[in-house]
Amino acid sequence: MSYHSDLIRKIDRMDWPDFSRNAFLSELHNVANEMYSRKTVEGYLASFLIFQQLSEEIVKLLIQNSSLLLQLSILPREIKERDVSGKTFGQLIGELEKGANDKDTKKLIKECQRLNGLRTNLVHRITLKTSVRSIQRQASGAKKIYDKIYDLFEQIRDQYRISFSKYADDVEEYKEVVHDYLKKPSKSRHCKKF
Image 1 (cartoon, rainbow, N blue to C red):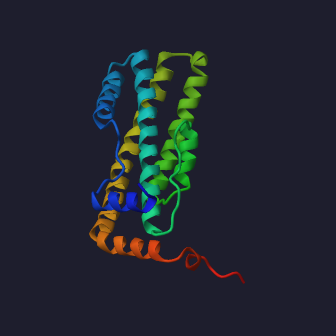
Image 2 (cartoon, rainbow, N blue to C red):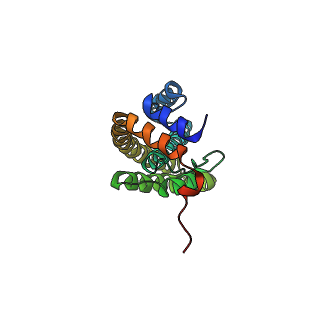
Image 3 (cartoon, rainbow, N blue to C red):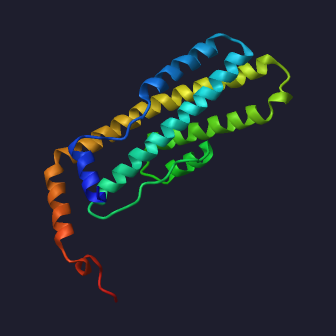
């Protein structure tokens, strides 16, 4: 499938980016909250790591949404999707910063940076902690940050859906634009040299 027909298909079918394992991630969300409520070292550590992983999945999805919005906004011109595979949480946050960001996305990025810093501190200094209480405080901080990230994510995702729906309303116009663009000889697509 070509770049243009793939984008038109996404608009026409309202095939927006979403979690590929939605039910499993929802289950993990519940497990993290359950583990946190146990008030044990292993519960705190498990919940902390799950909150961080779920935040990473959120960032990946927002990168995909940002990429699609940018692709649609410059149609018929092309822009490659950003590859998120194999990137660390910090690298993913950096990729999200490069996208189409509003004030809520900027807040989410800040919270993700806070969570990543907290995780780095916990993981790399776990043997230096002096008490279970210290680990509990960090896990409590991670839970609060994750809850903010999740709330912001829901708002941001709704905004993307609204934007994508507007493109879907005009899908026939976009089909025509792409058709006209692909019909023109390639030399007419380029600017003249000065």
